[in-house]
Image (cartoon, rainbow, N blue to C red; front, side):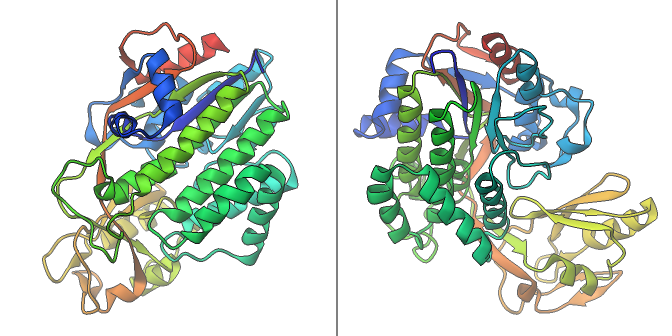
Length: 429
């Protein structure tokens, strides 16, 4: 694999925590990597609303800033055929391209070695029937994360992937330990990233591609929701024991998995580039995350029933499409004015894009069984908690600084614009 290039996205990982764990004797590959190669800061947008991974990874993948690409929603890239992506450009250079979970990327490859989209972007999967089954299973597992329900078919696809892609040593030692702890905070996300990593490495070993892209998101999820449990967190906030048990550090567990993944890729002899896009810092107050359970049932209850499509996105978000702009405006008025009867805080934020709305459930406080919501147009909806599930307590928040490092000299300054990574990667390829 001497002529191969591997890009691994460790979405939003904070390297200050990696360094702190290294000082405690953890993460041996990260220690070697950072001792030999410098850690470069990347700088993205200066507006907080643009510090979303589905925006910034599009910038990396297209070489355009937000002002140039205007992709604001997760999944929107499929509607933007005018935007060239790095995957097609590398393919034009004669490389065989494979990708697993590239964030907000559309599969437009002419002859992909493999392509598993992220769980929220509706584009085609390329590869064996096992990879296609795994893609559906991961999408279902992630999009049902609040209810923790996965179909029998998805479980079967995951089992086939385990048998075909996981080394015997990890099957014997690593996965039993992960499965034994499956009910602990962050465990399911760690298992999914581990399986995607093992699948990716098996495909690398088969030399199915010589330009390969892997995006791992569970570390971002764990920082968002369990950072206060990290043994290297220095803040004053603390997660309740019912949410994440004291002494359990999911961040260390996922970083240990990433450490092993990168070490194995490095051992194959490929040129390895590690990118974070953004990073997270500790959140400074207590904020709850909630998610609708049955989106369609709730829409019917509040009088929104003439949509053409309803698509759940990342935990709290969903997209609704309509035939007319008048229908969209009606839905925007209903959802945008729903508020808590307790404190008057709005339940949703709504982004109107003509014939569709992107909705995020942003109510930040606790919700009990007596909680009701109200708006002038539909009146009061009682027992609102029956329509939702608790997702998490916010622990981490985005910042515009990210990181890049590699197992070879990238010949970059100590700080660069994130969008410049497109040209750098394309030059290397």
